[in-house]
Length: 599
Image 1 (cartoon, rainbow, N blue to C red):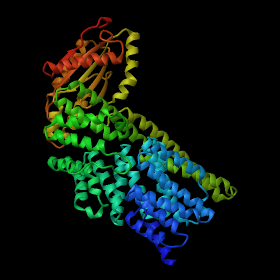
Image 2 (image 1 turned 90 degrees about the horizontal axis):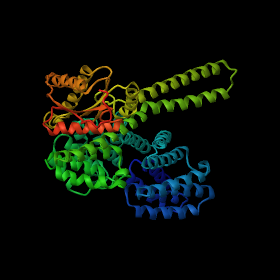
Image 3 (image 1 turned 60 degrees about the horizontal axis):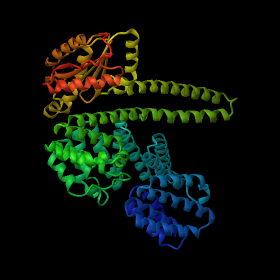
Image 4 (image 1 turned 135 degrees about the vertical axis):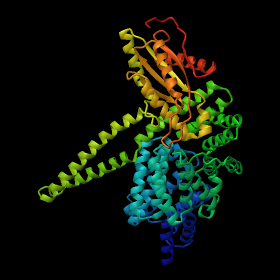
């Protein structure tokens, strides 16, 4: 019996650190005739659903239910509930997320008191981790961001209370991965690097593979190409540190790491040799497609890139199921392919869709900032401690001082949150690369400027500007030089345009200026000065001259060419395309529509 107890302790200790070893320990316990055999089969079922097959998990789960049915009532009730937790994981991994959510809701309504189930405090904390972790992933898949974050942090707290290394590592890995999904890349990087370091120290195969592959994507998204390749190379060079078959499941991330440093042929081999497999709880088709499309573009084959991307973009159900980041990258790849194939209208449409997703991701990032989560967590703790202090002996001097201190901390946190909300509002309306206002700000402020122009019976010019041959700059000098050109152009816009003009980065290399109280001739003259300034070579911060770049522009005047912002943007866009068609580096005006002649 002592040996059985030791094996069960090993199963609890290893269930999230090494599911293969936990399965072996679970079988040892299940083979014993004692009352712990039910927990042995339960551990086998958990290990199989995490690192085996659904069929083997279902068989072990059925045996666990049978064994729990013969146990004492309190242990049986808790055991059956824990079996339901594994069943919920199986439903989710099988694609039935709604069914998983329904079962979890049922568990929450019927969960017995764990104190009656005979679990130690550490095992009960691990039980709470398993529950919160499952609910967090389910809410994540359903798009319930706040609930997902709440459960991920609750899972982390429970994992810490359990003292279980595997649970702690899983909580860190999942939390870093969720911040990655929310485009909160800085926090995702810090949490995931911590998780990888601890996973390597603990020699945990599933967590090493998951976290390292996540870091490939995070480094790529942050523009850290060498570090993305470093993580991909680690996966390739250390297969023994991973779960069996992990390399085949991580081919997309390995290919991305190679592509980041220009190893295009190697990236293509990783994508081609073996099928793209499911990764954890999501389908890997969309990330595989955008990496393959980018590889095809790098190989000079835009037709193949479009053929890979287009079917998934038409599959709205699969597109909605993917992360916004993956869908944004797929749209960007398709936009580049369409541009190279000469389909400029489709390229523009896909670019705008990608920009819209980018703005959504920026908003998600701002909302999910770890600082805000930490503040809320500290607020909750401060409130709890304050309430506890109020219930204590308020007459004692020490308690009164503590209460005042807690109230002061609480007020400071409230003030911090208010400041943070103001910062997040400003972040949501700014383009992080150039510091200009973004597309959201355009549609929030533009109608008001038009209404003011209408009341005052004054003209307003809408100018749409697009940098010429910008993709060539990126391809020739690199994306860092392209970003520097965008920042320089934004700086020139601020220098040359009037202080009353509203300047927007509309997406990619396209900008919009709202120019009140000016005629089309006056606006064209201002933009001509901007064109001259663009031709001056300017050194970058590193001393290397930035490439020069001209722009094309289209102008539309309110109210002659349109009465609404959408009408003016459409007509300015058409004039822009005319400027592009007639040789670029031009400023063209939309034709009059006969609305008015205020200018």
